[in-house]
Every structure is written in structure tokens, then in C-alpha cells.
Amino acid sequence: MTTTTINIRVYYEDTDFSGMVYHANYLKYFERGRTESLRQTAGLNHADLFAADDPLAFTARRISVEYIQPARIDDFLEVRSSPTKAKGARLYFHQEIWRDEVCLATADVEIAAISAEGRPRRLPKEIIEALS
Image 1 (spheres, rainbow, N blue to C red):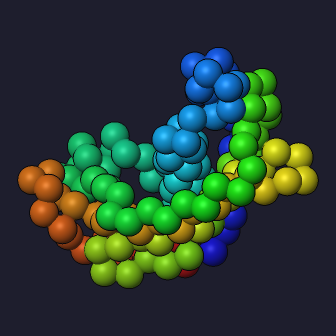
Image 2 (image 1 turned 180 degrees about the vertical axis):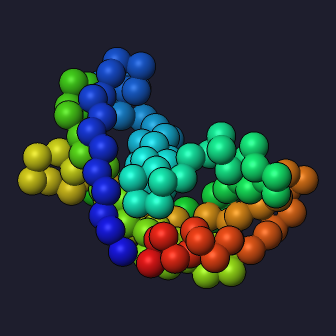
């Protein structure tokens, strides 16, 4: 499966009093990376999926993050996102955040597909094929 990248600048609002990125903000960066990965690799966007006749949305089911080194204010980061598996009602991603040649954080993420009512639902075959 394809690795996609997005770039993010660290702003003051992303940091804590020490000037380092607050740990929860890495989850936002990873979310942006997954969203763009779906858009770039499968032509999917959340608004269209949810507006379809049979609405589909995604929710995080499990996220495992390893924080390796801190990002700091004004850093220019690269978020790398790789879908690793699409099966049943689940999407799996491996993600990394880099500053230059240094990996700052990694995440393994399990995403569940859900209906408009919040119930699990299988991924459409087209999505599985597009991500394979």
C-alpha cells in the first residue's frame, strides 16, 4: 500500500509552556495524515462518504503511539501515513512524524467504519480495492 505525506508547521498554539508540542496534538497531526492518505490514495473524502445514500464514517478504535523525540515551535514536520490493511469494517494505518532525518513519533492505528447511526459496517469493496 502507498505511503502519503503531508507537511505541518508547529505553531505556538500546538505547544505547551516549554515550547514543545503537547502530546495530544500529535493525534491531530496523525488524523490529518490519515485523511489526506484516503484522499490521495483512494479519492475519498469524509463529506462525500457521509452524504452518500448509504452513509459511511470512520472512528478511531485503537491508537498506539510511541513518542521518540519532541517537536518544537516552528518545526516543519512531515507526517507519513501508510494504510497497511483494509478488511471487514476496519482500516489499519502505520504513521510516522519526521523532522528532517529524525523520526519523532510513530503510531499504529485501527479505524472502524460506521454507519450514520454509529453502528459498525463493512467497508465497501471499492474502498478495499482502492487501498490495496
